[in-house]
Length: 353
Figure (cartoon, rainbow, N blue to C red):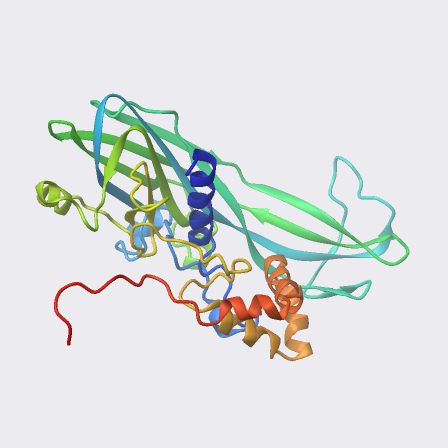
């Protein structure tokens, strides 16, 4: 497998981890299960975590073994989501264009119907990424700070006369922290790699969890790639490295090998428990945000929803709308591909019964 194909496979797995639980069936804002979102890989601000006696984590730590030489280079990337609050504004007098340099006055609305399309408040998410420079594992100690500034954007909503009658307001808070990478030589040619992520965002005291989540890393995970070296499986290490692998301490995450089976140049450290070499089923038409479910069942459930439920699904979230449109336009032969696929079968050795 060439490098581009391998990287594409890794990115697909990482993308599935990033959006796991983003929104669950029935993909509507009013559904009870979607009132308690943002549960995977959450790193709250340190001050909030300590205020809660650590019940909500502010750090995540990955430890794994690396077989390396003097020319080995280590690449580390941390990815997460950040919550973006979506609210709505309504103009008393329509506008031709939004004024530049200042924000026009509007009234906050809990619902808008414009041009036959419905809009409602929601919590979206923006992807954040911290990529470290290539590092040499020998005697490695590197600390990288990151900061994502707060922001606010207005999206104009036009009616059938092309006049702006409302706006979608998207706001996000400042987010800051650090990624620390260390390498500890264990024995000749083998090092223990530690990647520690911290959320050091400064927040007001006595915040609620809902407020703290606005300053949190969501679905945080780490991708480690090595050039001129090989990672050691944490799940199935070779006999001579089992004791060292057992000493690795992973907090809030678990590293697994990813790529083509047998390759050992990339690890995904995920807040969701995976096996080595996880794969996205080739029959899957796209993400459904729920890797614990079966695509066929979820797709069939979506088709049985009422028109009112589908209407709410469309207006809740853009990604949910894409799921609905993709499912409704899926040809019968694609559904047949989702049904009855067997994987992971291995020949039975030993005696028969």
